[in-house]
Image (cartoon, rainbow, N blue to C red; front, top):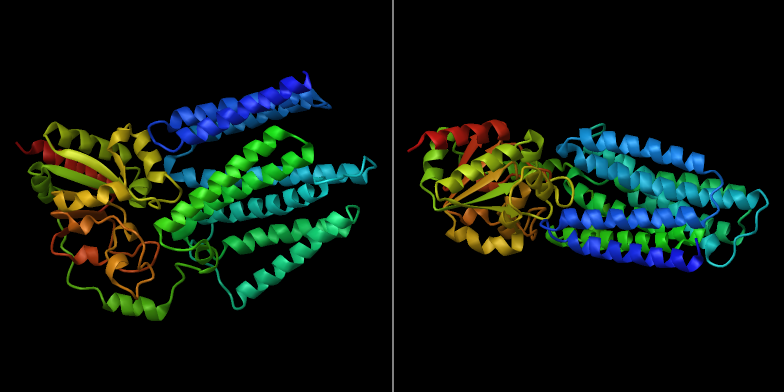
Length: 465
């Protein structure tokens, strides 16, 4: 395969990557965007295999078959509620692969191959550094999401000093390896400390910030792939890695803005750590008594409503209630009730979590409205139904300056005529603060599993004439 044809194939792949990312910006076109990006990657892989001097196609084919089989099994069996964990693992595998490729290139030099020159030594170092951080950091994120370890931030005295010193040491090792590529100690130290840094960067991040962490690790995996592209002299890998890295950073910024917090605060603020004094004060500040209602009580109000806005949260994901929610939506619309869904950027455990769940249940994309576009509609809404969401509907974010979530943009459900909140209990959300919404005069709590409550509510609405 000629060099010009290979470069043309990489150009075509790059165009498909860009169009794919553009289409991923909307739930309506996300499937098409995913397909376009996948086709682009297939073109890039085929071009690379036909152009490069692959030592053994049998080994490559075996890897493709085994990897594809594992991927197919995992993709078909994974529950949608576990999708954040899967994304975290995929980020980690991408970073690990980049670190391995960079390491292989460095080892080939030690075996007597031509000494790397130009930007290649720096690219090797960055591939190992970023790839190892991504790999171990993603494993910690997976462990937190899978509840193999606690989701609360893990902190210790002098944590930031330790991380700072480790960062300086890594910088020194990276510089040393670039200047002296044959130094095994520099390489082993860089690999080991990079892996440790990935762990130390993620353990102080709490469950409330997992969407940001996943997005950031995705960016890291792209940057590691980009560095590997320079190592291999593969423009297709450089382009795809750059796009993933850049889009991940943009998404991370969007999500930080959605929480009114800086990236530094997310990474180093240990948000969600328990502060006994704050927790006690907050608990004492809870006003009034929450009013408990049954699905049968709620059905009367829903049946007489003109419009309804549903706010999905992580509780809907845990209960796998998305299909039951779609059934309730269809029923209400058949009775002339207008139904929309209010989507907060950080609802759930990963970017776009609620969109993915609702799309799986065949909820029309047109009904999924972003926070900024729907907030103005709540004052004219008869009923707001909050399903397992907490912090993203907490009015303290607007008014309580001493609250840790003050300034965070929220969904203004409290301004609706009636608010129904489905929760298992009165426990706090990821932020660890009480929600005064639950004690408002227009709020009615329905306690129980989200799926069971929604099914009971649907049956009760059906029974009403």
